[in-house]
Each structure stands twice: as C-alpha cells, then as structure tokens.
Amino acid sequence: MKRTQGACHESPCKIGATNQALFGKPLEEAIRQSNGQIPHPVQMCCNVIEENIETEGIYKVNVATRKPEEYARKVDTYQAKMDDRDVHEVASLLKGFLNRLPIPLCLPTSYP
Image (cartoon, rainbow, N blue to C red; front, side, top):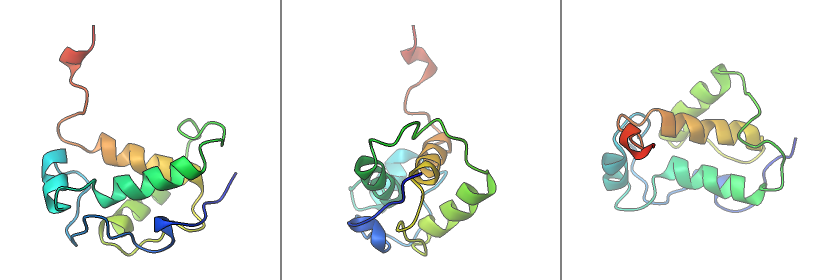
C-alpha cells in the first residue's frame, strides 16, 4: 500500500477553514462554513487520492471502522495530518464524509 506525500496534506489544510465540525452537516452548510470553498476534509482527501490515483482498489479496500471514525474527528477539528496516511484510509474517510451527508448527493429520483 502506497503512503501519501507532499502538498496540502502534510499539515492541517486551511482551505476555506473554520474550526467547526463539518462531518454530518448538509453540504450547503459545510460549504458556507468553509467560506464558499470546498470543505477541508473533502479537499484534503481529494489531494491525497489524486496523488495516489494509480493505486489499485482505492475505494474497494476495506479499512477497520475504528480508524476512519477516529480520524474523521481529528480532521474535523484540524488536529489531523494527511502525511503517512494510507490512501485507502483517506478514501474511506472521504466515503464517510459523503455517507454522513443528511441529504445525499444523488437523490433516489436521479436513478432510473
């Protein structure tokens, strides 16, 4: 498994940063709290995933549930760094952020 390196994820990223929790909030509110920017957990995860895009099964590998839960709390409060994070853990964190949205990105009416 490939480890992350470089860019914004070496230290807590301040893209549109606020110190308020974003996990589990409506996307509109998370964007508003991020000063109209991409919410920091999403941006940090996307940066890592993009750098490791050649890694096989980024979204398929299961990660122990406890790790993403603990890490989500740290990312939400800017206490987490992305360096030395396995890309599968980061992808799991992004999936967790999206899964906790109270209103899904794709509504059931979007499906045929």
